[in-house]
Length: 265
Image (cartoon, rainbow, N blue to C red; front, side, top):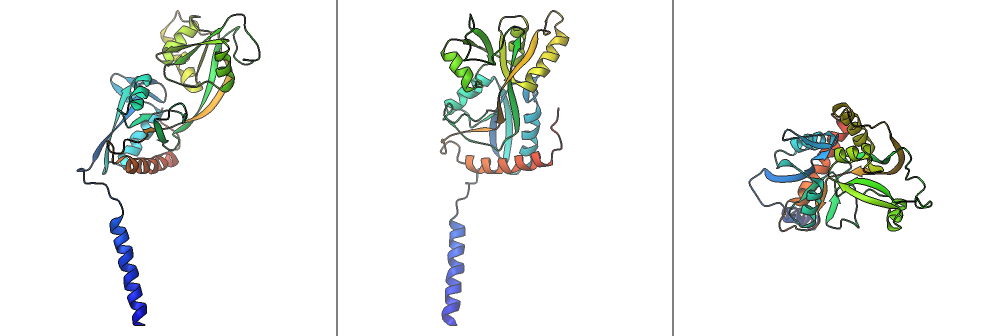
């Protein structure tokens, strides 16, 4: 009996030591400041207007950030998308929103947060142009295709068509700039998220009376992708709290997404 009690005491002592030995974050003087770079020109998901950030993803992450406020003070910083991507590639930033998952093409981003939402990427083209049968047909001249700068949203068929010279890619600053060039015939097709493009076409048609969007039609679905917060791979010495933040932000995002009947507009 005595031996049994001694074993129990030893077991509890061992558990206590193991618990005390578990890793803890250093005391930085909570809350810790965390900055997430955010695409400044991707309505309705994230966009800047009058110096403020708005959008579906912005609302979701702001709500999640409130749940973390005792531990982290989250700042959402608006940047042009291409600059945000380059800041991640150079290790200058810890987090970026809202990339699709591109593990091979962006090896410096890992892990990704839980999905914020699924987006449907489609091609919009002027009448007389189509990307549907590429690369199996060869147009007489290359089809000019606009994309948002820094976005990698071509499927395998379009990437093959680009290699064969059947399409020519033009990177433009934003959704609005691509829509304007499409409406004015400076590009033949535009590949982007469906909702973002439709809202952009509607808005620009109202504010620009000389812009003819009547010839623009949805051509084909390119892909379906989920959007995330992407985190910088490595750099634990620079961001020792990163893993803790990722776990807590994911849990907060799950709670917000689960309890939101519909995203804010």
